[in-house]
Length: 228
Ligand SMILES: CSCCC(=O)C(=O)COP(=O)(O)O
Ligand SMILES: [Mg+2]
Image (cartoon, rainbow, N blue to C red):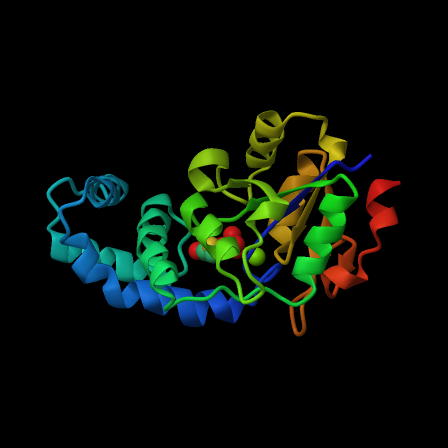
């Protein structure tokens, strides 16, 4: 029986454009100023970037250039995601950023949690970013429906089966109690390899998701199919 619904963000709960055309440019425009801040969390990010590029002596200007390139290439790497999360946190607090979630997401979260399912987020965005995102949506604060958040540092990359096993171990329960919803076939493949149920979410115009059962929106998922 399904007990845990694990959700991807970009392309699943939220439009890809909300991440790529709003969040990414917001962080990109502020990177330079942030990298030069004397803040221990930022210093940790800088050290991690230097390690990732194997250049312990890289200047801050070089770090900024690397981070900008990673944003442009949509690289899902931990130091970039951590720094983006720090920058976005301020944007949400100031009211400059509001998270866009599809209209069908809040009622589905409400219905699933009311039926006893636990809902979790697994995204490449940092946990801080995920919490800010669901705390500041155009539909209000949705964090009350969420049991927890997983990101690259806490679970691992989304296209590796081991990451889903780590989430399952952290949450508890057997693999067949988990269902993962995502728009990316390789992520669904990895979850299926870990023994999870999978549902492809194909928002308008989205590509196919291989052999996984798919739905165009959360409203098209009948709860009884989950809890049977
Ligand atoms: C709102 S969290 C930030 C989303 C993000 O940075 C990202 O890269 C989206 O990755 P996902 O794993 O949700 O596709
Ligand atoms: Mg996605």
